[in-house]
Image 1 (cartoon, rainbow, N blue to C red):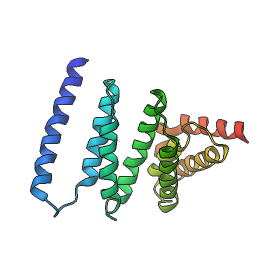
Image 2 (image 1 turned 135 degrees about the vertical axis):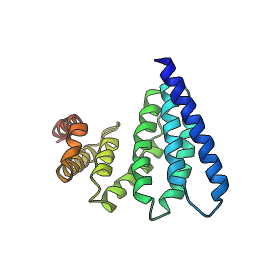
Image 3 (image 1 turned 45 degrees about the vertical axis):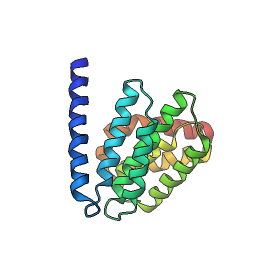
Image 4 (image 1 turned 60 degrees about the vertical axis):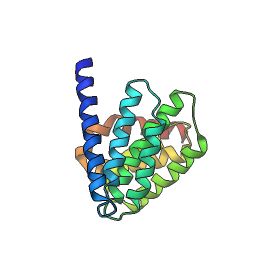
Length: 178
């Protein structure tokens, strides 16, 4: 098992070197911030898995998100990854006693706006619903998260296998707060 992790870590290291070469070659001509955002998010996941502090990697992913989201071509992809970052970061913060309520509320406001902006993007809306269900629980936010998840699964039934349990949980939480 550790051999597999070492292989993955080595591949990610080589990928980072390749991306660094691409960045150097591209200069300001080609925005690849959405790819850099994804790479930093992946490295943060690995850091969490390896029980290391991911905050520098999460900050790097946030910085690349700012640039990628400014590009209309990459905006939706950047928001999808940012939503995953919100879920990952705030779960990690809560589990490690490092909650940041102001950052959490700011992140929630941004992803809720993305749900309104991209109403047709079912995968994005499903991930936003998952992030909105993070504690601390607010009854209105839980109801909105349940509505988003229902809408996402109606728009794209293929998401059901991945999100059905989350939907049941959200609906139960919404009933509990109703």
